[in-house]
Image (cartoon, rainbow, N blue to C red; front, side, top):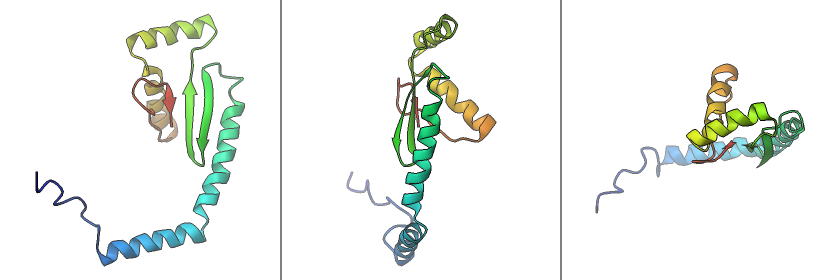
Length: 122
């Protein structure tokens, strides 16, 4: 156990790592990366939230900047509710898992389920 943290990072604690970190902070500040993420994220959330009335399984859209969560919920219509109930019986959170893969394969949108047994992707 005394050697557990002997090798925790290949590129940490050296001059090059520090220079790269400072260069990254410089670019983030000069190119206003955080402000841009806030603007784009606000617009993205607004547009996603506008889809809620159209898609009954879209329960909530939330987040900050470009860290956005989309929550799916139980639909009202019988046709959709039947499939939803079957997926929930198989495993809670399976619907969100089934959304993530096609988003990447069809649209090249990289997302992930936000947690085990959750119907939220981020």
